[in-house]
Each structure stands twice: as C-alpha cells, then as structure tokens.
Length: 215
Image 1 (tube, rainbow, N blue to C red):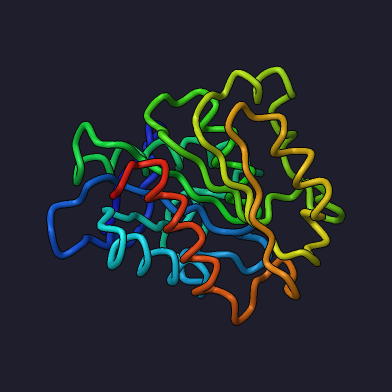
Image 2: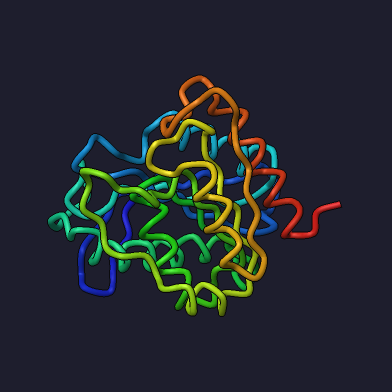
C-alpha cells in the first residue's frame, strides 16, 4: 500500500492487521537507508508478526523516502521525520482514537524519537539499538535532555549487550533521561540482533501489553 507525506512524497508500506479489531496501532521505522536498511529486515518482520498476530495491533512498516519503492530523496534523517508523522496518521485510520506505539531501529530509532517528542499521538516509544555512538554514520542530533525529561510517555530502549552503536551503560544512562524509561539488554548479541529477532519481538510485545493495559 502507499500513503503520502505532508510535503507530497508517496511512500510504500505494508499494513499488517490482527484477526480481530485492533486494540491499538504501531509504526515501525527501519535502519539507515544508505546502509541497506528497509522495512523488510528480519527484526521488523518479527515485530510485525508479534504485534499484529499476537498482540492485536494494526502495524504499519514502511520505507523511508528515496528508499526502494518510496518516492523522494534521502533527507539525512531530517525530512524522514515527516515520513514517520505520515505513517502514524495512516495507521491510525485502522484504529481511530486508539493508542499508537512507535518502534524504531537504529537510524529509525533516531528519527522516531525526534518525531515522538512533538507528537502527542505517540502513546509509547520503542528505541532498538538507538545510535548513541553513531561512529562513522552521520545522524541529526538527538533531542537535548530537557526535552527528553518533558516526554512523559513510556520508553523502552532495547539493545544487544555488545551493541557498539548503543553501548549497554550508555543505554542505561540515556533511559534515565526519560520520566518513564526502561532498558532491555539481550546478552550475547550486537546491533543487528541476528537470530534473536523473535526474542526481541517478544520483549517489545510484552512492553506494548504493559503500557496498553492488556490483561
């Protein structure tokens, strides 16, 4: 399916719906498009399956502008904020007036966070491998601590304990900047969570159930 951003860019996405009426919605934001990132990475497939199939959310994964079948050109992580905003609007058509969880991995976590701080529609935020140490990748700066402290909604930071872009101790410090931040570290894996995708998706699903009040 496709949807259009506020600046007229048509993006391609995949909408996954639960068997019953959704009780909430979710948007998935992929890793860096200049480094092979797309909506089709295994961790994002696992998240779609978990959140739609098990947790009964309407889930939208999409490709950022200029990536694969999405129109436009790469925006350096700045214009992509509009892509997340449009994805939130689109997925909420499937679950009107219900909470929206936004999940981003790596580059997608950076963009998701910068949209969420100004978007009250985001009920909870999942940041997987957020690049606290971007190293050789150029990314827009994350919001300053005073903005993070004003963000009152639940935030989960998930990473491998050997993630060089999101080191464990820095993840713990970063989570403390939020009013309701928590950290989940997967032992024995790194930034890419290879072969741990289902485990990571279950952690995210449990978080979604907690913040959405599932019994």
